[in-house]
Image (tube, rainbow, N blue to C red):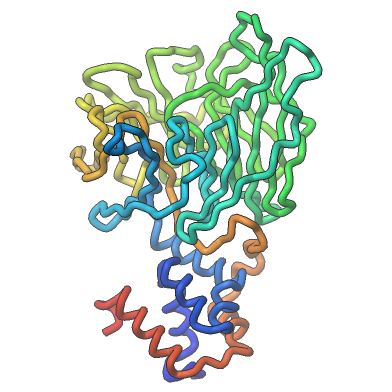
Length: 418
């Protein structure tokens, strides 16, 4: 068995893969060899895959009140071990006091933020790296004088074909005195981390995006919004990041007509799309959960269960760990509902009511500036020993480096490696 210092190569790699991003960022400063290793796209891919299988968290956006009574946005991570949470030290200077800040999606550790009016920001909370996207390629005015442009939808997701993340933006053009409640027409553009630029798509938007709390979701290679078609039916509008085409997914039959008194939220639960229906305003709320067993097929919608009635609960925030739902309480407290035990548990997380948004999140080393293309399907099958050989074929590590690594190992995994 080949060793590095007095550590086997395989163990050396396994140690690094288990370290949190913050520690890996420090390790990059040890020497140029460690910097090259941790910056290598293959290592970034392996570290991401390990965290996908072992360290899935919930990223929570909320507003807190300062001593002056002003609202400030805060990002926090909720971890599975004992529902512990940590506040993230992320530079939100652009949107720190923005009351309408939206979490648009998560892709390989990168999140997308916007207020739908100004800049769009990509951010990796773990590495604290962020980037403002370049200006839109669409004109800020319409060739028709009485039409007003407005961003109606934004989405963020992963393109499995190019192995890069993309942002999609729908701009709707509204007549100044129209009473229809629907836009005159819409245009679409896509930003790719592969090219670092926007491009306009020559596609028709088949439905009109409307707001519904906690609905925008990335799943199955596509981003999903709540929408209304030209016949005023409720639908799910999806945009596939790979083929860059729209698809209209029907709602369950019982929900084909819009009902303002009921809210709809969309999540991913056990590898399927889950739709949660609940009252907009009520002292006691019941939450009906529908699951689409066959993606895109209306007849496959199945009502799985009803939660409640529950008091002092406003809306669902995220499905988590398969049998837990994070929910916002009416007093600005986050609660967790266990589907198996039907128990409601208060969590020590507070915020301004109706300021919460969540994403299922994974820490990673992926850069928001691109240049870290993920491996394709053929390369993912390479075994660890092959990757170790790739990593260390030209690497000479002195004994002090190994001692530093052992120190990190004991610091983060004291029970397993004593």
